[in-house]
Each structure stands twice: as C-alpha cells, then as structure tokens.
Image (cartoon, rainbow, N blue to C red; front, side, top):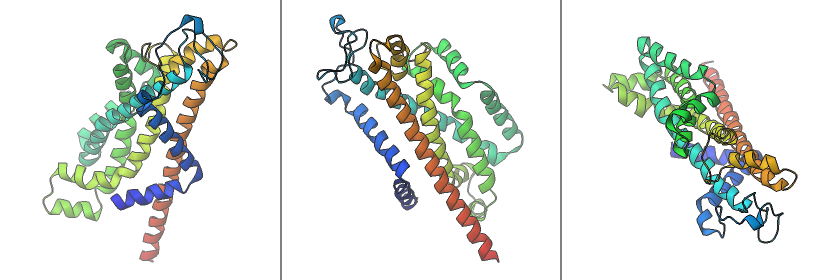
Amino acid sequence: MRDGLISLGRRLLARRGAALGLAFLALVALAAAFAGLLPLDPLGQSVADALKPPSSESWFGTDELGRDILARVVYGARTSLVTAFGAVLTAALVGVPVGLVAGFYGGWRDSLLMRCIDVLLALPNILFAMALIAVLGRSQSAALIAVGVAGIPGFARIARAQVMTLRSLDFVTAVRGFGGKPGYIMFRTILPNALSPLVVQAIVLASIAILLEAALAFLGVGVPPPTPSWGEMLRTGKSYLYEAPSYAVLPGLVLTLTILSFDTIGRALTAILDRDETDASGATIGGRR
C-alpha cells in the first residue's frame, strides 16, 4: 500500500496542474499553521486606519475597523482548512462504515441505511447546514458538523459501490473461507482495496467544504466574528468595493485558487485511477484471450 501511494504521488506530481495545485495548497497550509510566528495581527483595530489603501505597513490595506486585510486572510485560511479537514473526517467516519455495512450485508440493512442516505441527499446542502446551525448555534464547530454531515452521502455511496464490487472476488472469498469475521473482512480486507476512490472523494469534499463554509459566512450564519473567515470578509468587503477594492478581491482570489487547486488535484487523481483501471481491464482480457 505504501509503495502504491508513493507511486501515485509521483504520477500526480508529474502533472503540471496538479503539481501547481499542491504547491499552492502547501503554501496556504504553511501560512495557516505558522501564522502565529508572522508579524500579523488579525484582530488589531484602529478606526483612524480604516479602509487604508495598500502600503508598506499593510500590503493589502485595512478593513472598515482598521484591521490588516492580509493578516485576516492568512488567519482565515486556518478557519477554512480546519473546517474542511474536520468535515472530511466527520463525513468519512460516518459515511464509510455505513456504506461498508450496507454493501456487505445487503438485504434490509442495505435498504434501511441507503434510504437514510437518500434523505440526506434530497436536502440541499446549504439549507441543511443553515438549519443545523440554527439548532446548534453559530460557531466554527457547528459549521464543521453541518458541512461534515452534508458530505456523508458521498462517502457512503462510494464505499457501498466498492464493497459490492469487491466482496465476490477471490481474495475476499479466501479470507471468508479461512474464518474471517465480517468486521475483519470489511475493514481489513475490502477497505484497503477501496481507498483510491475514497481519497478522491475526500479531496472533492474538501473543496466543497471550503466553499460551503465561505457561503455560510457570506450569508451571515457561519463562523461568528471577530474570527477571520474568507466568506465573512467577502460579505463585508462587497460594501466597500469602491473605497477599498483589495478588501474583497484578496480573500476572493485566495478562496478561488484554493478551491481550484483541490478540484485540479481531484480531477488528476480521477484520471490516473481511471487509466489504471482501464489498463488492468485490458490486461485481464488480454490474458484470457
């Protein structure tokens, strides 16, 4: 498995778009992780410095309260990345076991679990997240849970499809013949062989989670101020587009590039895995002939 992941990483870096996306995400992640070591204060207010243009002291100007825009963008990366990571983790921890159980056992378990998943799929993500935040209260934890719950169906459906494909193969039958218990077969035999599409789903969900968190903040129901958030900066910055264009432009640009980077990496991984599957199918058919 380790050699396979290393090989996949090398092939991903060989693609220019994916390599650029990884580089940008690494830069954003490093800035977010070590923001405390930088001479940036996202909460420092000075009414006298409100809406100042970019300068040597404040590279991208200040907002309506005199806070440094660059500092808030850097610290806003923490909010977005933590929300994305937590949402993916929440969705995977719930969705993958649900999909494994539904696909492995079938029957009434499959019908019951997948009908619950269908209910989640029928609810628009943004409306469901807003309703959940209304119940849990406005906080970063509430936004993380809301976005994570919205991502459960994707993991469940992919895990179920992979189990239904793999459960009848020879290596699974052999483990079952040697007395392997259902839990061992699902999590130790089938799941490691179904990781590739789940990793792609995690990357796709990360981009959706960042966009959804920004949308919630833009609508005024996301992470409460004064916590820096790209969506909150877009919401307040749109009122000052003429006085301070960089107020909304910088967080919007970083948000766009972050989502684009995740999307590019996800597409590259999908293309690589599809090619591997096609090559494997061709080799199998050729061997039979």
